[in-house]
Figure 1 (tube, rainbow, N blue to C red):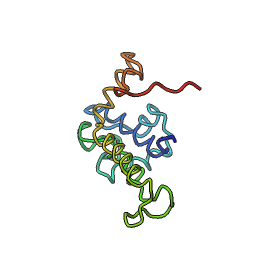
Figure 2 (cartoon, rainbow, N blue to C red):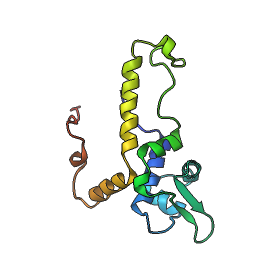
Figure 3 (spheres, rainbow, N blue to C red):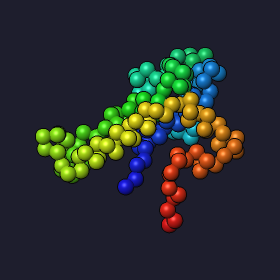
Length: 160
């Protein structure tokens, strides 16, 4: 099983990360965000609209316009951004049956799946964009490798 971000989630996280890294430096133009974070420029406004609707980002039109975070980076969680651009984090579909998930007809996997989803949701809720921006800055500065930022007990990647 692979847990990956969809394009909307990926681009939403990248754009928010950029704004978190540049927080306090004024509004950032769409073109600047797209170039810096390798996001298709034509797609970025759609993502930013979702972030604005969720009150995570503000925008202003005009020559001095652009985007900036609506709150401090430490007040925006990874979960906030993911739900803004991809919708609710919790699946409402039964893992085994494919239809709506209800406790009155719970499948054998229901409790384990719910627990796993909750752990992921809790982790994303506890991860702020100030933390992500700090980690990104350290990695960009060459002050560590991705392995330095793995959680304790995280297994080594499998050899292919």
